Length: 184
Image: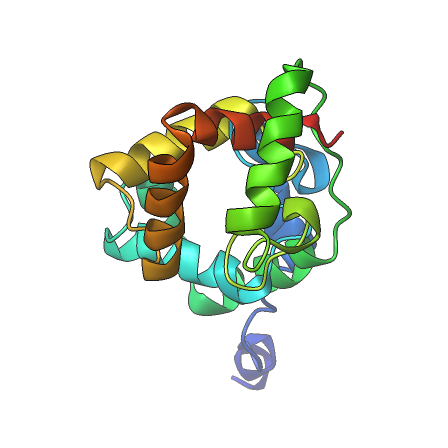
């Protein structure tokens, strides 16, 4: 009897580390969170934004093709551990072809309409994701999701994008995307 008691678990199993949990993300989001494909890079992401995004995938308020199912497998503690891990990883911007004239125009548009929320040319953001160095295809599809209503844009973003389109036409978004893609 005493032997059985000594084999009984005395403590809960340790939680996996953020590094261990994040390793399962690397197939799509790249090693250490720097993507080399169409999925977004997570390196350097704001912790709160990461957790809010994953919670939105879990509760279905943000549409997804795969992430809604994946997110349901993680606890709040797991999400926090992954957020802590990804937030301190240095982003390795994606190497991609850009149209320099569009990127130059996009740089001016970014300063006028986007810089307040996506600081340092889109390299830093307290309220949203990092835009600089992301896949231009990912950014294009994200903007299409916002436009279609498949992804809710913050009120300030909706107003700024609307203002930019009214003043500079439909090509403005593409120019801004080339600017973010040019930061390599």
